[in-house]
Image (cartoon, rainbow, N blue to C red; front, side, top):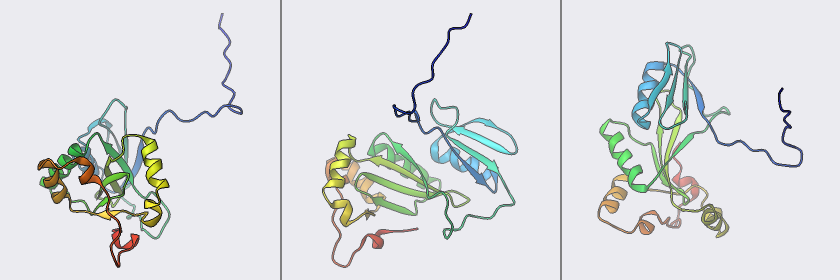
Length: 198
């Protein structure tokens, strides 16, 4: 005999997703895109055939799904769609080491920016999908909330561009992390859009 179960009361209790599981992208060349994501994320193939590939880098069965659609053209920035996918690294050192590893493979970020809450490196995959590799500057969510409340983000919602090689050198020289990750204010003549690279 089965024991009856009762569904949670979704009207009076917020039932939220437990996690963001994966992102699936349409790609024009499956092998090329799969190899790019394997290298960038240091992932492994969980499943693949000639039409799709599921990639993971942790205990999730797949984090990135790639579907072969060779007849498709690249998505234009003039249309709505996915802006970017972000991956957080456990430390600034890990992010900068990943930058150096990718640079050795000739994968260059097109935009390096200190958003304030994150230090972010943006890359484009072979089909032009944008990938953000980031380090969380603040340890706790309340600290990010305080940063937003300070007015710093109101003044500059974009961030300040930086040279990743210079940041890596400062890191290796032992400069305090708080100094390396501190976001400066806008200078005379700069606007948030001065800092944007699409």
